[in-house]
Length: 207
Ligand code: GRF
Image (cartoon, rainbow, N blue to C red):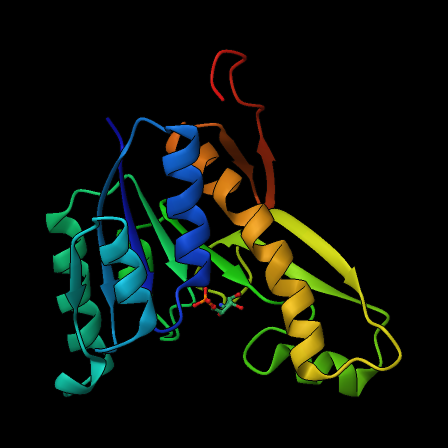
């Protein structure tokens, strides 16, 4: 049975969408744990409501980025994950961490990458006047927000959009596209060729 670990920093709505899909569709995996770098965030409650063990590893408890990354990596390794899904995890992970989990680390980013890497993506999309915005699920590589793209969804930017309206429209798509990719990774259906990724369809018999 494959093991899944999820990392969060906040609200946990993508975490919820994945745990919900796994429960409804019966992926036949073990959700080994949810780790947050912040105490007291709503996502920890989401995890508990699904009966998933939680841990807090606060980056503020560590003197350096490397020390935090190492503690996090050791906690993750102890859970023996086949896939580690970043669900609104707001720390940049160093090269040693990324290399250690290469091919197993997946992230969702609220833009149509490679546009709008980094933060404030919805506000920047409005400032730039783009007509389409969206979300991207990608493998994590050492180039920030630039690993192989596994799934994308686009939404129109409407004339009267605010950051709140646009981010809600994107978030709806995030919840739709992230769970099937996590499932495909767990089922070994993702093939990578450079930056190009191909996902094989699920077997007929599975839901
Ligand atoms: C999402 O928009 C995700 O794309 C970004 O951070 C946000 C996290 O939201 N990386 P949530 O914690 O999953 O609700």
